[in-house]
Length: 451
Image 1: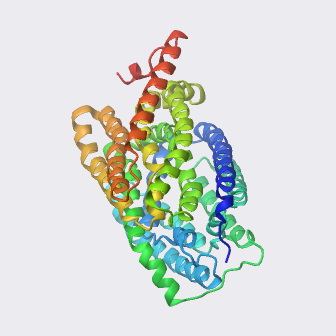
Image 2 (image 1 turned 45 degrees about the horizontal axis):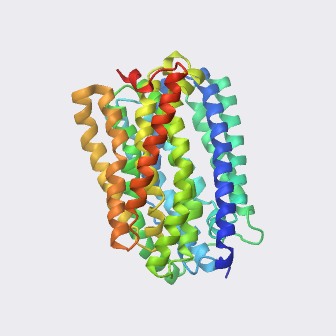
Image 3 (image 1 turned 135 degrees about the horizontal axis):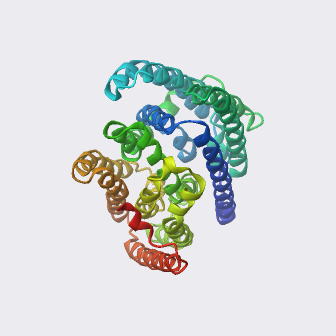
């Protein structure tokens, strides 16, 4: 069985962090470049509608998540063929179940949003879940081994081909079918490609009861945690789709995508680097583990501080440069949404420790509190302050997520609130410096735009 050797953990972590950040950077450059082309070929309404469709599909994925990939990384049997093939078989069954649910919710969703196009968009886009169900979990195995260069390169190739297909189809069709066809192409490429990532590793149907019990035992809390994570992170688009027009949702999606760059970088490091590394050190005494986490976390926080402060102070200028007048409202949304990302960064740099300890229920309670703030706060804020109130609630919604996780870290002897206070003070200082420089250069204050 292949396992990570402790003497190599530091080297593996550095290598993994490099590939994760480099891969994410390349991915985002490609993504934003593609978005610039697409926003000139398609209407904002299409982006809003697809944001709702993708959010609903993601919800079905997460509401049926059994923690299969996390089990392969975390479980001691994660390299055994019998264990992996049982996980793969379970994943295929799950893919068909998700598609059946897509058929079931199509009419209620179309009725709720008063959008008849959802009647055909959801079932056809849902076919991708069946296709992806046949993906061999080779990426999870590579992630377990910290061979992230192969994972990153594979993901990037899929993204390039998918984006090229989407842009060509958008130029040709200028319709929603561009998203549908490119999504199916992307799913097929990914599903087929995963079977060639690891030589000698091929998917075979298996049903090992012991493996199944271990996956389900770990996955029952992962199911709750990921379901609540969907509600916490994606319900904003679903609620906005009801409160506002799809055009405004499309504009919000542009702003949120850019604002979420630091969060997505940290999430990538969290799952691909921090989680597998800590999983190999969970037998250490808690005090020693806590010291290791704090020491390495500080380096990540320093990079996040610089990136986030830069984004808050320049995000509106980036949007004004890259997008046309139809996306003007995204400019005032940017600095507000970006500020709220700080609490998310504090969360994702510690939550992998609790997951590595085999205690995903802390993530479940964190996401529950964020969802409650989103679901209760957004309609109330919209009534009182309109779109501005909604954006402020979304920005603040990461705060309860972080506080609940802090409680879990305290319970498990990994408390790091002093480091959080220091990092927050440093972030505020750097942000004030960046805003002062911006003002001296004659670009004004980005927060004035929200008025």
